[in-house]
Length: 247
Image 1 (spheres, rainbow, N blue to C red):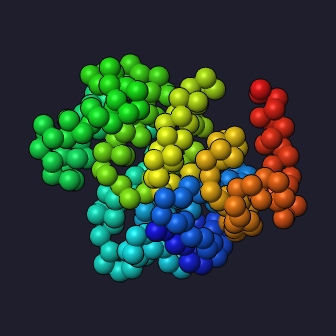
Image 2: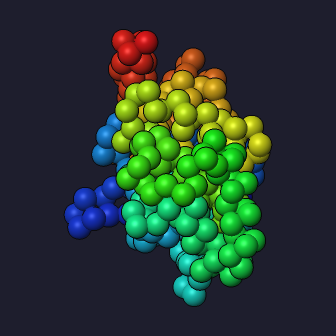
């Protein structure tokens, strides 16, 4: 479904991704974790061409993201992306935010788009907020609208870039619950997150990245129970201690 082949990316003299390779099977959930500044967000943004790679290749559902002539707009329409800062249009209602891509990109008529949007708003528990503008919604509600908007494009995969990092603690669970339901429905997902409880519950595999390199790519149980690298052991120790302190 998604394959990264020796992907390298630099900003000036700083190499943010250094020969990253990984495979995400159809219907699987892969969590990408690692310390801040390790290249996680850059990696996920390269998957749908929001960041251009310097070398290597990324293939999504048989289409090379990096190949000359690839229609990136069409490709992005097939890969849902949820950002940490929601990225909703503030002057449009929740319903209009979910409708927009369907009408402009998929060329659905407004009635069909609205019907689909209301189904998705119901799915994320916000059908009763359809007429509200983003400013009238909580952060958790805005992020769930953003997820509904991505799903409205009927994506083959979903990318999540730290979707709960901008939320107050009490709002995190309402977003994670939606993501868990997506995973249970078989959605292919790559999730950049520090929410290790979510990773343990949902992920099939964990990619641990440090200094732009994939240090570990392992099944979830093995990663948490027996991390191979000292860096991953140190990271997990700090993260899990923090989670325990919050509890």
